[in-house]
Every structure is written in C-alpha cells, then in structure tokens.
Length: 249
Image (cartoon, rainbow, N blue to C red; front, side):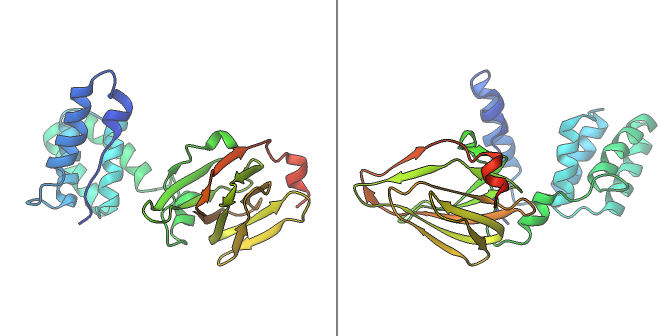
C-alpha cells in the first residue's frame, strides 16, 4: 500500500498555526491514516460516517467522499452507508450527504475531467500546477521523474498551452532534451518552422538557442524534460508566444 502523505496543513496554516499544521499532516495523516490495522477503504468509511454524524457536510466531507471513491467505495456501497447512518443521525443529514455523494459518484452530475482522462493515457504522473506558470500561457503541470544523477521532469500542457520563448545558456555543454510521452504538441526554434511532437518524438535542444514548446490547440501534451549538464548553465525566459504566432502553426 502506498504511503498517504498530506501537506494541506502546512500549505494553508503553516505560518498561522504551525502546531495544528503538524498535527494534521504528520499525526492525523502521517501516522493515523498509515496505521496498518485498518485498511484505507475502511478508514474512509469510518471518516465519512464520523463527519456525517457530526453534521459536517461542507467541502471537508466532499474531500473524504472523493477519497472513499478513490480507495474503492462503490456507488452502491456509499448509498447503503449513508442510508444506514441516516437512521441514527437524522434525515436532514442524510439528504445533505447524498447531495454531495451524487456529485462525487457522477450520478447525473460530474464527468471525468479531460486532465484525468489524459493522465490515464500516459505512463508518467501529471503532477501539480507548474511553479514556473508565470512563463506559460495556459495551464501546465510538473511532475519530477528523477531528481538524482540526471534531473528529469514530466511537463504537461493543456490544449493551447505553451511556454514563453526561452534560452538555455551555457558556456560549455548544456541544453535540454525533450521526449514526448503523450498527446500532440510543437517545438520551434527561432527562425525555423515548428516541429510537431507526438508520442516518441525526441527533440535535442542545443545550448544558447532561442525556442519554445507547447501543446497543439486540440490536444493535451506531455513531454519529459531532461536537463543536460553544462558550465555556467542558466535559463533565460523571454517574451510570450503571441496568439498571432501560435495561430500560424
């Protein structure tokens, strides 16, 4: 079983309430949720019932309903759980929880997101929103694949998303390699025609060359970004790829 890791406490309350953040991330989720006597599915059911019994029917309960679904609780099971619990906690609570459960189990409501569907097609995780998002038009995501020996990251772009023109500087060596792992996108060097990238396409980017890369207008796109070691290496971010430039592809 993979270890459950939670960081919401530190992200939201780390500075304001560091002890609470520690108890939430390290004790509740770090120790209690990873304690092996009960399996995670059972813990999810106990948590949903506990929150429902306490009258908590806000986003925190929805999070735990989503977690229950992710860990194997079926629509029929959650319906039976909520119904049973309603007999002891009250009818209004049952109605409130069923409204949330219908959203989570997509009963006439939500459908699978395009991002989730794309992630199932590729062999690497999509990760979190890209911390370098200021240098992108549209939403991108970043997931570390290797942080030892050779740094490798999976970069995922939503349709039409692209990074700014940029240069990987180095006085010796340096540059970057891109390997497409899913979807369709483009790579372009300044003064040259765009190169279409599909699964398996490899792009070798020399140091000191101005370029950009990103998704096609009608497709999600993921590539591995492999940094090539070099002397005095740095990345210079430049102007965005305008809608006019992009529309010419």
